[in-house]
Length: 385
Figure 1 (cartoon, one colour):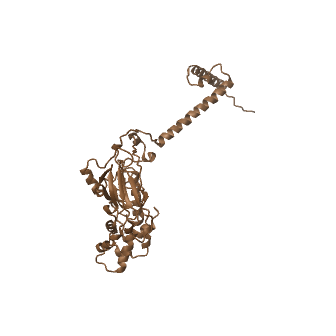
Figure 2 (spheres, rainbow, N blue to C red):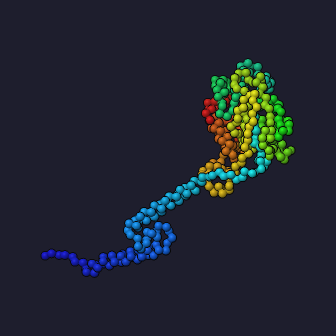
Figure 3 (cartoon, rainbow, N blue to C red):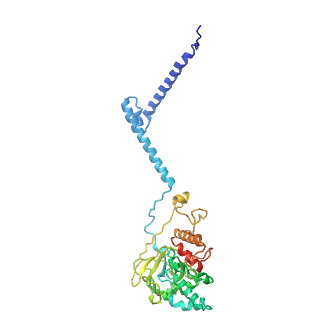
């Protein structure tokens, strides 16, 4: 006997009915698409959905429409990426901005030979008054001479002290010794003129620290003398509204090679640093001796639109001065944020990291310990900044 299962006849009718419903939905959708194609203004889509179009014609328009759609998506992705990256463009806001509204830059002048060696006997009397040991006096002289070529990133002169007993003179603050032996205003500067009018150089220049050591700065607000000038003269820092030779600062610099340390043979020159107000340091120009040099300064200022604040500092690659909570914010103590001040603070932290001290002659007063005589060899060993 054979047993077989025979499904009800009703089940055989389900599949044809389902196919009929799907066929009706497809026809309705196609009719809707044709009506949409007659009324649409999308270029290409009306050709694709035209009732009288052949299959080959529809295929061509389908390829065209898909290519155009993918191209539009690609362009949108590029624009979205550029917006999210926060790329900025520099545009010229005005070429007629009055020059006299822009403060003249700070001009800092340094003798390439930092010390007036003729004051060495006086320095010994002042800082080694009770010392008669010849070895210690000679060590004092060697330490002082190593400061003659010192600037940030050029600590190799301290390498000569590697095997010296510098700890014997750790009680002496050699920053004070260098300050005592550095060039005085009347020893370095003369014949100063501002916009063709003569001035006393020592009235308009003030001694300041920099990463080149102790130098003399014009138009500065960072020194006590500069702040005093601002109180006495409401126009300080000075400005100029003209251009050309003698339209700003003129000064003659005295090199005086006969007063240089005789143990150093080098090209006699001066270092001139041109910076914006409130900028601690910028790489200087080297001007050789016995030359007449004119520095051309372009009065260009940059500013950012406030809308750039909506972009993160990582994307815009700059920081506003009031964004002190940003992880990208770094500046010298007491100074506004400027990229040069940020770099200077990084350099100072480099010294603190490797030598646990900072060369106070090169930076403004701060919270770090000043390097003493026994730290100088460490500066020479980590000179690769």
